[in-house]
Amino acid sequence: MALIIGLTGGIVSGKSTVARMFKDFGAKIIDADILGHSVILPYKPAWKEIVKLFGEDILGKDLTINREKLGKIVFADQALLKKLNEITHPEIMKLIKKEINLVRNKTPNQEKILVIDAALIYEAKIDRLMDKIIVVYIDEDEQIKRLIKRNNLSKDEALQRVKSQIPMKEKIKMADYVIDNNDTLDKTKKQVETFWQSLVSSRAFL
Image (cartoon, rainbow, N blue to C red; front, top):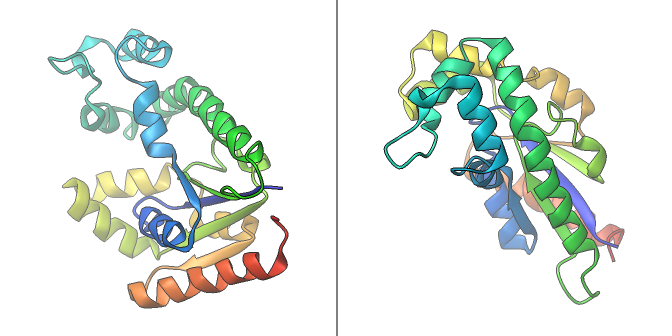
């Protein structure tokens, strides 16, 4: 039976880096960000709802949604962020369920560990679809520094985005396993390897 691993954490905590490490060990990776991009492509149902709610000012010349502009709007208004999530999360969940079913229906000699890389596993309430959940952890101060650098935000804007998610401490309490990504990549990889070996040795997914 396939094993479904949820990989989550705070914004800019390094989930994608950890996901690549799991891929190197042999896991199949589903990136919820990529799925999220696909559900808001022009004329998709979610795209229509978003444009209806926020207006055409959020669109580029090619009619794609300007995610940076939309982000500035919703992270400054929790009510609008909630409405946006109510539009996109069900569509993303459909795609994740489809991927899970595909892996579970594969023959025994094909991929049997699927890692769902998704920031909002708990917020979107899709944790019930996972067999195990890993939280990638960094300190809040480090999150804010990385966000300011990556997205060219002010400190207040970065803090808004951090606070829009369930607090890291709460996610850690709910997780089956925690990867501390505050230190070097080598130390992070050792933690990933330890968790991977525990999966393989348990034979729970075979």
